[in-house]
Image 1 (cartoon, rainbow, N blue to C red):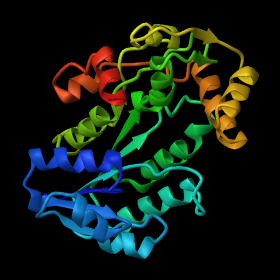
Image 2: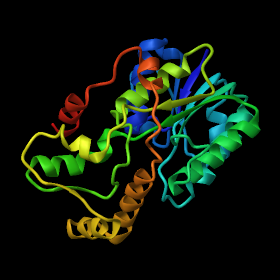
Image 3: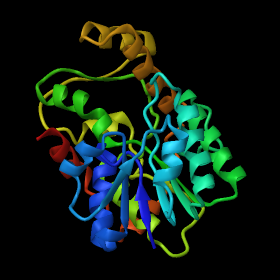
Length: 280
C-alpha cells in the first residue's frame, strides 16, 4: 500500500507526514511538494519525494502514479491560479493516475455552509464525488493558531477584541487535525465525512482561558476592521479577517462533533495547555 500526502512541506503537511511515518513503513510514503529539494531537508529519510505543483496536471499525474491512498491538503486562496482550479487539477490528476482513495481537508459542514471561504471546498468535494474515487472529507473546524496574534496581544495587556458575538468555534491545535488526517488515511474502512473540531467556545469563553490582565471587547464589524487597520493590517486583510468574524457570528463553525478525539484515540489538548503551546 502506497500513501501520498500533498503540500508536504507546509506546517500541516509536515506533521501529517511525520505522524504517518509512525503508522506505516517510511518506504510506503510518498510526499508531494513544489520544492523537492526543500522537502528533502524537512522530511524523514526514506520517504519518496516527488514534485507536487497544483498548477501542473501532467506533473501531478506522474507523481501520483502507483499511489493507493492520497491525503489531499487544500491550498491557500489568493494565488495566481485560483484555489478552485488548483484543486480541480489535483482531482483530475488523481483520477488519471488511478488513485484509489482521497482524504481531502475541507470546510466545516461544507455541504451546508454559506461562508465565502467554503465555496472552493464545495467545488472540490463535488469534483471528488463526480470522479468516482472513494473518499473521506475531513471537514476541519478552526485552528487555535489562527487566534495566536490576538491571544499574545491580550497576554501583553492589550484588549482582546472580536466581532463574532456569541458565535461558537471548535478550536483545536493544527497538529491534532494533521495527525487525525494521517490516521484516517490508514483506516481500512473510513467514514465518507469527518467533522473535525474541538469543543465549542465563544470568544468570550476563550478569553477566560488567556492568562493576564486585559479588557475583553465585543464590537461591530466596522469597528473591528478599523481596529485591525490601526494595528497595522492592510485594508484587504482586515476585510478578510472581519468576514471570518461575521461567518462565525452566524454560526458557521458552531456545529461540532467528537470525530477528532475519536480518530486520535485520546482527548484533545486542554484549551489552557493549547494556548500555552501556541504562545510560547
